[in-house]
Image (cartoon, rainbow, N blue to C red; front, side, top):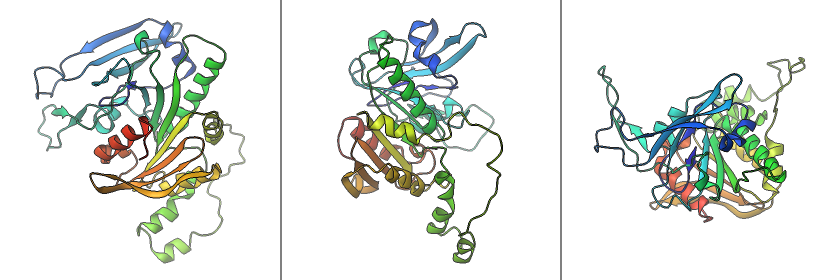
Length: 328
């Protein structure tokens, strides 16, 4: 969970039964302030506010969610809040904490049997925490990447439903952000071969041999998914006036940006800012296009599946501009 605008993340380790999250404010939680971490020797104490804890979501079965919370270093009382959900499904929140948008990162060095060393990450994002009432009025954004592209939309959908029913507390939701998102659509997977061909990974002959219809799996089996596609949630939420940023690392072959761009176009929103490059430090950091209904699509040049892991500086710049309602 996270406060947005500047450095640091807190992330749920597990994401199950989101409706329980809506009640987190009302349930007791065990929170602990962390001032020191093994392997962090830059300063005597951590240079940011880090809190971890467990939040009970099921009294009968004793189910709890673990979270990291890192407070904004700029203006916590006014900065936007960002709830970051880790993808997978089932990936550890610790990955996002030290590899993507968190305030810490590992020092890359040969393993010698000792604990890894940690350093402060100047390109981390600032996050939010959920059961502290002083943050109720802050603008709230829900975000995540990879498989969380499906989960984020469901989270926003349910929170908005709760708001419509005048449930308390009422969340000040402003929008969502998804990176290299899985949608559940075949377009995510069908884009892999054209992407590999365009990147020069496969030959002309091999590519031409794949351009035909064939069936790998029998989709006629009696099997039902809870959410087969998140696109209907995309349409419903964005056309209701909520902001959205969809971004893709342009070197991701798992969910290639060409497929993501195709389904974004399939929403048939009018273009408000045509395809162009966006820059960081005078260099091209990617390409972007904006649409009606406050939807922005962007690529991150040279980034893989979890874009902030590969291009931290560029992703932070993208996030700051978008969260402040500026053009990329």
